[in-house]
Image 1 (cartoon, rainbow, N blue to C red):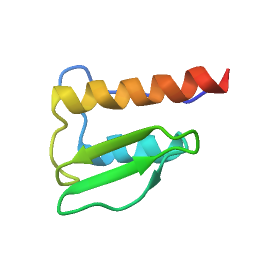
Image 2: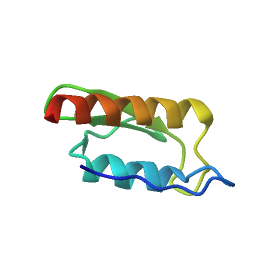
Image 3: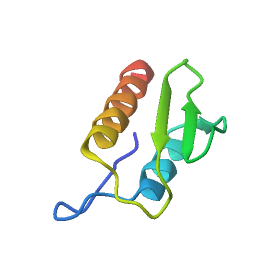
Image 4: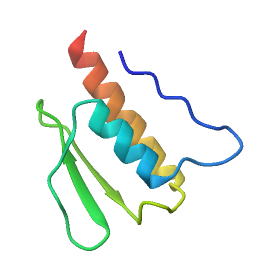
Length: 76
């Protein structure tokens, strides 16, 4: 099980989301421009947009958490 701890006063950076996706088993399939497409072995897909140093938007954090939860549920 992978635990993700974030600062509560500031949103996570895009690079932190990418790092955690990769540690959860997602692999980067590339993308166009600042968009990156990550796919898990079970078929779950997440698209993260923005430069690595940008703060993650609330919708990106929600999508990230849903993808991680989906992968975690299937591993149980």
